[in-house]
Image 1 (cartoon, rainbow, N blue to C red):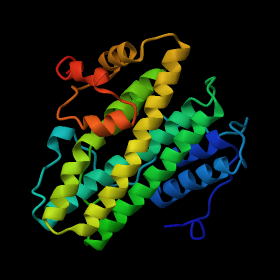
Image 2 (image 1 turned 90 degrees about the horizontal axis):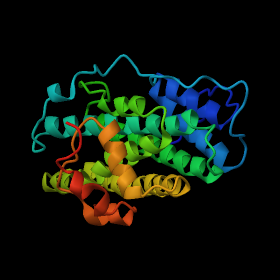
Image 3 (image 1 turned 135 degrees about the vertical axis):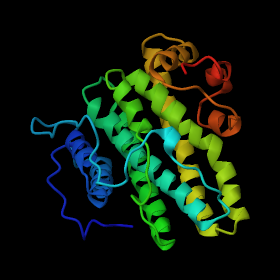
Image 4 (image 1 turned 135 degrees about the horizontal axis):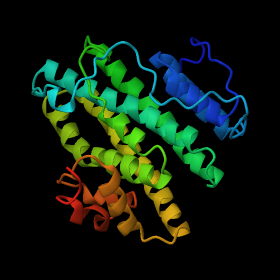
Length: 280
């Protein structure tokens, strides 16, 4: 989907500016198009990294009035064997993907002053582009089923992870791609199978695209986490475990998709011993 012709974009002064404006946008068509257009211009070398006129990096992302945000434990669970249950699952995935757009943009905008190679930003803008694609795909599937994003409540736990690691790039990499995104590698194969079992091949096809892309997203996180650890002369496994204990609210839950995680550079040594030792 390409909404560029239908959406009037504001001036994008730099990579940081485009990312910050996209995070702040409450209109979700504008948010996703700003994310993708900023990624396109950065890939084409048409933007500088920073500008004195950049928009400030928001502390919270822009959102429409709906969905209502409620505590995670209050989000209802429904059987995937009913249309309502599949809509509820897709709505939850849409919410995750929307947060993932903002998380990828935030790592670019908030850490644009960090002394990292420009390829760091290339990787994360590719992630932002693909997360915007995912949100649009899932939203289109919801609409095809007679629903839309915002029809059901959602929770705010994903953005809290960004807020908690806003001052530490290494901690952000440990928590967001190496825990939250990696969790998607664990749970998505079973969801793909259940969608096919119920005959919902269109939803399964959307999950197929997301799953393959998410492997690359975890790989980007693992690459740059290892890069920073090497530069700081820290053992990546020990650093990961220390940062998770200090910054992650929750426990690491089995089962793990060890093969997909290892393909992305996240080997079992990172997380296996933490299944019951992370903060609860």
